[in-house]
Image (tube, rainbow, N blue to C red; front, side):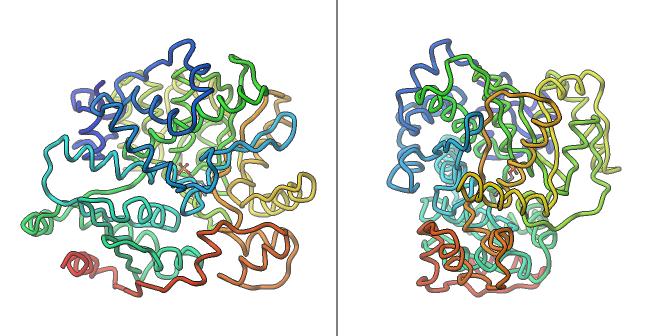
Length: 495
Ligand SMILES: *Cc1c(COP(=O)(O)O)cnc(C)c1O
């Protein structure tokens, strides 16, 4: 199977090439030339497998550069070994007769990024071997929180890689900062940047585009690579859990094969919900894909009107991982909806970078309406939703998941659609204790580690071990750099 650039069909590569180099040379995203279909009896077969086996089955449909035994090895390392605190890896919790919640936060960093970032390092190092790359990959990440820790855990002690994460000094939560600065592993580094997330991100981009710096690293035996969410190696592992959830619901007798299942996904960069779209294309009977946003509602407007317009105020919310105005992975959906018309996609992306806005054709708009629905949820409503779900269902959700639960409520009221729905839960509530405590009506303003214990007391639940264990961990990293000195920080890290 070949992968093509969303902006030029002639830019073609193998699965290994797409994963090794991430972005196509023309700036487009590598995307499968065609989405494979599952065999008619596949869901029945997969139903009786465990998560790792399901992952091998689904990923091998896309990765003909890799052997089944390679993928089996990777899946064992990524999802076995008690890396996840639930043997189901992505367990499905039944909330009521028509609503289930897929919990994607049982991994080492307690957010859904683990599902992909535990797998990516293995796919990447495998790809580099296949491409004959001898140098060590130096992975640079700019993070606003969850991705940095997820990438550090994923790449920790993975042979042939070093990883350095930059985060904005005052732009992440105390818990997130501690998660990163206590990271274990011989090949990892963490550095705070004086500035905001954009400063960190621009700094990393600048390093990537500096040819002299690349040459300098090459002499030392390194090349730069990235772990960000536009790499196909991050999208693919996410398709697996949609297939897996459908199988679990069949196995539990909640769905007959062929019954429609809607999904509702808290969305930022459009990676997670895009994976649901691919699962649907492969033949999983998914119905409506409901895109849930916070007050940064650029996607709500896009899905409703066909106009993407990032020229709007940026809101800092209690669901920070969705505070995004440019959803990079949307480009892959446009590729699908224009039937691979690279010129059209390229045109939209050029308009986006020049004016911050584009409007899709009536044909694309129709397809959007066929597959998607969208709504958004303010911080106030998210807090009310956390309180209500705790009160009525005795189930604790984080602010990102609350956005999805509320948007599903809005969708059902508006449309009367009673199709069973899978809500995707993207983070443990214990990752966002102060916001959750406030939602539950606690007035005390405890912060950081203290708030974890406070939320345990308030709910009688236990925080996941990786979070409660932070208290005893030594801080390994205290580096701070000015945004102009990030390249120097990379030199120091590699020396
Ligand atoms: C990254 C993230 C999201 C957004 O996912 P996308 O794939 O970027 O749409 C939602 N919730 C949490 C907790 C996240 O970390």
